[in-house]
Length: 282
Image (cartoon, rainbow, N blue to C red):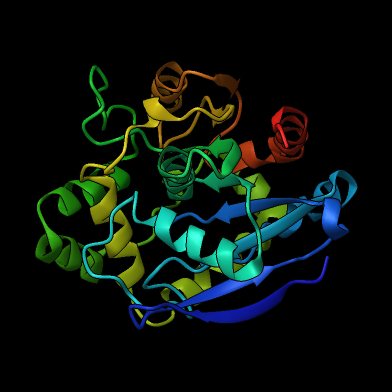
């Protein structure tokens, strides 16, 4: 699959950096990929063989503040829907599916909630539940470094920026299965993490602030079919978040991979794409 890149100028003066494989001809299923934190928006190359076989066209973008996209002050989870709608309009895409990993999974679900007439289906991988999720102990099971990072975000922008100025990489947030994935096909993450932080932690800070505030939409209102894919050993976003979301979304299916962590669960991404193609109604 060949990825083309372009910049979309928005009416408010912002710029979004957009990626598009455009593969499969007019019959391809457009799937918007929503990247994690901190990543840029390159679509997931390890899933290209499956997406080529299934007729999936990847469309994605750098979230505001990452890569080539202009920051957006005070952006929240639901604000992603307007950006996705603008990109889809510019590309002549009416209806589409969404897939997101980690923090991107929350943004994917929000698009489905805000754009019910356009989103055909959702794959939500390793995603956070809303910060105000009723009945969920939101921080329970998180690695200490992840808990500290998001606790700092909950204290406000200044506290989060101070935290990031001193934060060190914590390999313990990843499981042995995650480290194995990073040494294999999912070494691809190096391609999307390094450019995401090259200009500083601004995008990451904006993401984490969004995660600890109200989404601006209810995942329970999503009418499209939803696949919730989560690793049972996830130390970054515990599987209780995936279980909560699966119970909240009315047309959802939970696939819990007991031996997987936050990244290795993406080894089930090809099967998730097959599910998506089978469940969308076009």
